[in-house]
Image (cartoon, rainbow, N blue to C red; front, side, top):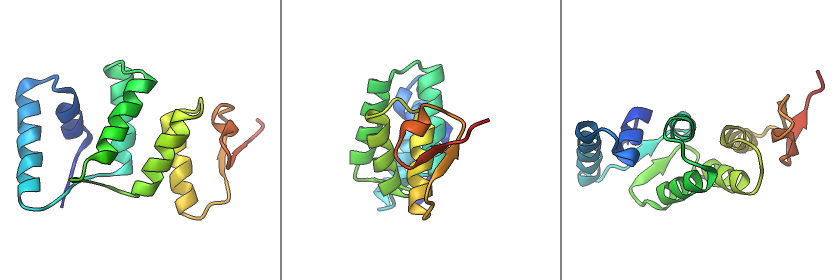
Length: 133
């Protein structure tokens, strides 16, 4: 297996640097040709969302489309794919940020009863508790 750094995934998705995009695609295809999936960690996914939203200026609907396409790709392996699927669903159906949705989903997988936060929007998600300052 080959894990993807955020910058490789971003170049692969955005193709905003022709040379790096071609190199990213070639490296991923080479890994796949050997029968190895390309792996995306939760940290990589969280960073990718931040870059796509803040730097590439993608809106929520475009982000959701990217995440869904990644999840549908047969040759990609996600760290805690169930958490990623839950996070995408929560993000789509709430006003919470993707990072909070992803953290909550992973905390659930870890057996946490709740996620504590100061973020009022995130606290509207089931399983999140708002801490009063």
